[in-house]
Length: 567
Image: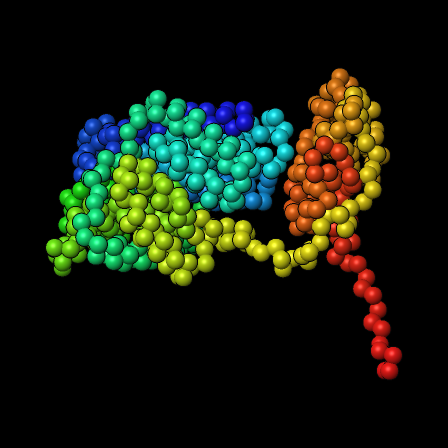
C-alpha cells in the first residue's frame, strides 16, 4: 500500500513535468502554445521563415531525440503501451529505469516539434518505469512488481487527463489484463494520489471543454449504433495503416537509426505545411469540430490527415501515444456523420456535437478494444453523465466490429509482429494439466540470513544450480541468493563486509498447485536455475523446481503398449 502511494505520487509529479516539457518545447519550436489552432501563422522566433518553419520544426526535433532514443532507451520509440504490456506479461514488470527520462524528453520533443501523437502512451511508459524502478529498489516479488507497474500507468493517466477512474481501468484492462481485488485496490490508491497532485497543478476541471450533450429523440440510438459500427471500422483501418506506413518506413530507410527521425521529419513537415491542424496533439481543433465549426468535407480531410500524420510520426521513429489521435479521428468522424444526418433527417438527428463525442470513444474502442476504459475515460474527459447510455451503445458495437474485422488491437499487433502473443492459450502447452507438485524436487541446502557473504559465496559455488534459498533465523522464507549476484558482490568489493541478505531477492512466488507453464515463465525470468516452492502462506518451503525437472516432465517415458490377451 505504501509503495502504491509512492508510485502514484511519482507518476503525478512525472505528469506535471512531462506536460511542462511539452509546453516548453512547443513554444520553442513553434512559438505558440498550440500551433494546431494558429493556421499558417509564422513562428515569432524566426519570423523570416514565415509559415515554412513547420517544415524544419520536426527535423530539428528529430535531430535531438533521435540520438537520445537510439543511445539510451530504444524502447522509448513508438507509442509505449505495447512495451509496458510486454514487460508486465513476460518480463515480470521489469522496465529499464532510464526509460522514464528518455521517454519524457523524446515524446515532448516529438509533440513540440509537430509530431501528430498524444501524451497517453508516453505518460503510461513513464509512470510504469517509475513503478518498476521502485519495485526493484525495494526487491518486491514479481507479482507485486507487476501491480506497481500498473499503479504507475494508472497514476500517469489520472494526473495527465484529470481522470482517476479512467486511469484505474486503463491499467487494469490494458496493462494487467486481469482483475483482482488486491491489484484493483492498489491501483485505485495510486490513481487517487496522482489525480490529487495533478489537480493541484492543473485545476479540477474537465480536460476538454465540450458542448452539453442530450438525446432528443429515441431514434437517435439507431444513428449512434451505426456510428459505432463505422467507428470500429475506422479504428481497425487506422491500426492497419499505422503499421503499413511503419513497414514502408522500415523498408525505405537505409541510414543510421539515430538520423531517421530527422530525415523523416522533413516529410512530416511538408504534411504540416498543407494541414497545420495536424501539429502536435490538436485538442483545439478537436473542440472546434465537436462544436460544429467545420464543414463535412474538411472534417473528412482532417480525419484522413490525422491517420496519415500519426502513422508517419510513429513510422519515422517518433515517440508518442495513439490515444489522443484516436479521439481526434473519432471527433472528425462523428462530427461529419452528425452533420450528414442533419442534412438528411434534420428533425431527428439532433446536434452535431453529440455525434462528435460518441465518435471519440467509439474509434478508441475500435482501435484499442478496451470498452470499459473508453466509456469511463470519455465520461471523465467531458464531465457529461448523459453521454453514458448512447456512448455504451456505440462503444460495444465498435468493439464487436473491430473484433470481427481484426484479431489484434493497435497495441497487441505491435507485439504480434515481433512474434509475441499475449493471448496465447495455455491449455495447448505441453504442460497442460500438470502442476508443480508433480515435478518438484527435494529442498537443497538452505542459507541463514546471518551468514557472512564471503562464506555464502563458497556455499553458492558448490551448489549444483548456483542458487539457494535464504531463511530467516525463525526458519521463514526470505528469498534466494544466486551465484551471479555473489560474483557481482565480489567484483564490487563488498563480499567481506556484508551478509548474504545483501544479494538476496524475491523471485516470483510459486506454490505446489501452480501450473507448470507459470513455473516455466518464472524460471525464465529469474536470475538462477532454480526456484523455491512455497506453502500457501508463502512463508515456508515445501520443495524446489529447476529447468531439469520441467524438462523431465516433458520427456517422461510412456509405458509400453500391452497387446490384448487374445491377440
